[in-house]
Amino acid sequence: MMEKNIAFNQRETYAPTRFTEFLWWLSTAEKELLADAVVDRNRHKIIGMTVLATWAFASLAWTYFFWTVTANIWLALPLGLFMGFIILTIDRALIKGINKFSKNKLWPLLFRGILAITIGTFMAQPALLYIFTKEIKLQTSLDNEKKKQLKNQELSALYKSRKADLLTEKEILQKDIADKYSAVAKARENFLAETDGSGGSGKVGIKAIATAKKNEYQKLDIEYQNLASANQPKITAVETELKNIDDNIKKEEAAFTQYFNDGFLTQVEALNNLIKNNAALQFRYYLLVIILLLIELMPVIAKTILPSGTYDEKARLREEMEIEMAQSNINKEKQLKELYYTLSHQNDAEAITSFFDITKEDRNQKIKSFNKQWKEGADQTFDGLWQTMKKDILTRQEQ
Image (tube, rainbow, N blue to C red; front, side, top):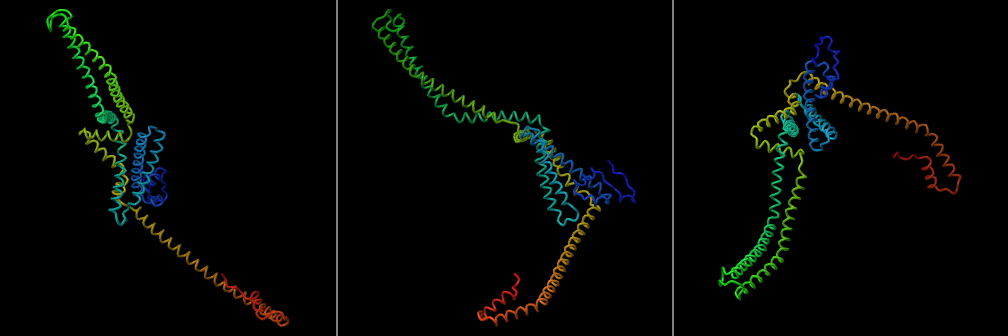
């Protein structure tokens, strides 16, 4: 809402609204100094609005980020608000250090710019993921299929040598059986041809030659049966191991697919792949990144480009005054303490002097009394008299 024009003679009674005070707080301004700075009021409201917008954007971006990680909105919301508050404190610290009286503006501004760009770049990611949700889901599906194929190739390569050995062994066993069967079939044909006269000696019936061929055929058939009986279990074992290998590959592929998810890093990877393969999207992606970065940089940019008014001068003069007052108060307190110690020393010295003056006569009387007792007594030495007087009359040094 636009601020009403206030007559010049009534401006000392200006009372900002609570929302205006809140915006001033966001802009790190002191409301006591802004109350009389008419032009700077709106400047700091503008800065406060940029900080508020950045704060809201950061909270939403971080909430979406945590939601992609936890899929629990009641957990993501407080975490997002907490991280948004951290961004708020950083932004307030950045703009608080920017003023026209800074001696070195380049390095602090460069540092603030790098920090803002770093934070803004990360904050831009959740926003972009939300904007391109449909495209990212499709790309994630394609990426997962590629991962499946790559996993299948890795597993196939892992078992390739063993499968090749098993297939070779199976072919050899089957070839031995097939060769033996061919020999049996040929012997059978020779035997039949000999019996019906269509081959061999040309005589019909079972003669000596036919009998010999029959025996040869039966012998080969027995050998074939024995070979088939011996090789078939081996072939079955080979086929079982091949099947187990295929089952293991399928199990590992199934276990691998369980790790597929649509988490933050997976979506970021899909977004990167999407950008690589889509030239039309690249321009819009980088444009959105720049826009989102500007949202994070808004407080620093606004604080930098807006002209400085009377507020900064008042803040500088007020700070100098507070420094001078603090130094003056320290000096006065020091002088008072020194005066206190001086007067206390004088009074203590006078009290001690009075004490010794008052007790001087009594001490002399007591010395005379000890001396009289020593004269009259015969059992006390002079050294004993001295020890008694030293104990009862002389003073000790203060510790």
